[in-house]
Length: 455
Image (cartoon, rainbow, N blue to C red; front, side):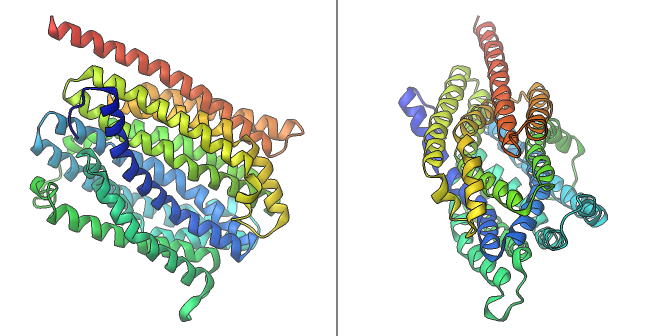
């Protein structure tokens, strides 16, 4: 990263950081995409099982990863302040937290996973697929969390292309492993949808190994000597990450758990409805990789500029990122609405699933724009390390608006499952507007602070 002086230079810097992050996010998402689309081609019951398993795993992973991703804005600010030793210390403490969190998740899963699935009262085949999918995925939890810490460190230095290359190398491996384990190719057992969990776990270990090699051997990462001195657990350093990371993680958790709750509520409908909802959600989630990538670049850039005390540049980056994400979301949402049946056909061979998925996707345009607004406004606030009020806003929007409104429309009107899409869209829009208001307030405070320090 470097100092920019004009709006065009800032757009160029956002783009330089954004494109590799986008390819990386699409690569990460493609693993879920391969699981979903191959399970759908296997049969709709396996697709429903993977959908349930994914709906349980996503809020846990994204919420806890949100804690670890706090390494990125913290390290970016220290990098902007030219404090190399502090950057290394933050990453080391992030590694310790990743190990602790992974162990907690594995312990909780062994105790409560089967009971949770029994509580959902699923059809037997769907239950078994979801259970074994998550068991397979559990073997990749530790490498995935460690990778997220190292990825946050690499992003904080502005070297986003590195992770892009790692993910591009991993994708063919994941694709082949999915085919092998789901369909039982080359003499391997035919595991159906559950095989996707094992394929993804193996891929995570490969990704971690590649990233570790780069951090240890390649410049400029090796000069930080991140893994040279891992002795000595630092409670204060970990507490600093948790102070920023826990509200970040909870904000992310409440969003993804809201989607998971909708999936669980929809599980009371037919297998066709479950499969159609999951397919539609998978499509809009794929497109969501664009605004989420903008948001990740935005957090790093704003954090860096705040650390360098370039508050005007931080403000300009914030609004450029939000504008870019919403513009792209509008056009991608429009394309999905226009070609909804063709896109739905990629996921399933069953006409009923394709038709119902298409009806859900009619709401994709409004959903995409609302989601892009709230995720980028939230990312800009994280660059300022303002996370506590944002957490409260997202909690109220997701669980006080999205879910209750969706439930009411689905169960007390004739909309059925479609009502959840309207509820989600309204709640995300409310979150975006409130987060924008908070961002304006924080930027005003920093502007006043800069005026006082220059007086």
